Image 1 (spheres, one colour):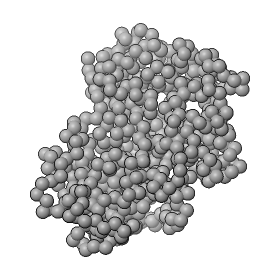
Image 2 (cartoon, rainbow, N blue to C red):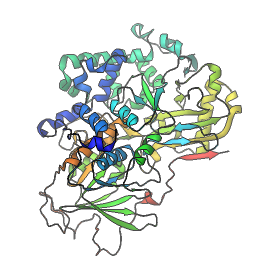
Image 3 (cartoon, rainbow, N blue to C red):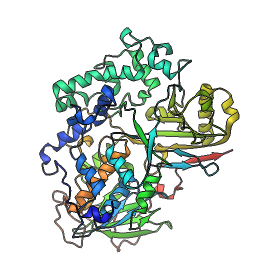
Image 4 (spheres, rainbow, N blue to C red):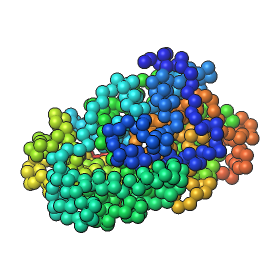
Length: 582
């Protein structure tokens, strides 16, 4: 459907925006989306979620409206605005596309030398094989993302999450996963009688059943208050009533130990088995979005400062020659990661609660190691995809499906498990992963490795500084609680979007949803401001007088002869992954 057709539709309304009184409760409830989705999947992942009684707890109240924006677009604006979007990840690109189609003039500023953010497809220059260094799958329930891909002409296919012939190796015991599914106790864990004979996913489901019962009996809000204070480990051993060996099994086999000390509701504890992927590589998504834009996209353009005036915003960015350039816009949409936003100097400064929300974001490290082989040796073991599990440093090994080459995701680790690869040289990281693959598949692995590979450590990426957001438990509620912050409300002319600003964290669709919400607000001209100064000086906010003479934030006025120093990361190479050939 073309942009012209989409522009003629009425502007969708987002429920709840006109009633801020219960917003904090709603936001805290949405924190529980990940765990509730796992409960739904635990019952029957083939079920139609629209018929599930937990739908009211797990479903975004504006989901259908956002889906309409993807398919129909926004109403054509009668007051085009100059919009600067900071960040060319999927959130920034989606917002730019929707706003451009609605008639706004959009410019994207990207600090990196590429678009896509944490969508990052590696394309081997020698073989043409691809490996996903970032996002690699989408649950079947993510209809907004599926519709976006279809609207851009991208083909989707099944992501093979499970193959019965893959391996699980722990405690010096190696078994095929079809054995582990029926008798996990053979791995050497002293399980209770009721835990024996259940798959690891089944044991996890046993623990989740208690939460499911509480949500049915107590209701969404009361159950949320009960569980939001617990870590995943506390829940499994306490409310879940699992034995310590069973919990250790989940940590080793399902890699849940990376989230043991993080929030139970926010621990991405899902068991969905139906996933999709983009045929040809996930980077086709940002590339398709880019091709649909009419405005400029400036790479290698990190934003260092912003100054808000009564009717516009000045954005200062660093150029490739380490000079500073100032752009002016009516509104700015910040889609950069939390750490990247903290490095920007704002005048007037961001409100205290917003600063606390930014500092309160907990980014989890994630590392992927790919190894290139001369042939797909895993086919000899009748593996057609899926992943093997091990308690060795590599933890999870994902196999490409048939006819898609021999570039193996030899290690995928996150949270505490990623520490095994932190600080290693690319050569050391590749050889550590190679050793673990050989432990599963035999010494032939050494002979078939062609000496090449690639390592991506998202915690060391200067732009994201982490793989995804998982919050710690909520120990108390206060006005400064980062998890209660309403990112949908703009700060003057500055709006926010990105995976960290919506729920559930860690998914591409979440970034898309946040972008659509911001685009709707910008298109409708909604503001949240209290200017008390003239149009020629930066705003002085009610309750917060900002003195330009005393301020330690960045001064954008031309009278400043000396530009502020560039942030250290701006001088770093923009290639954010390590690639080593031997």
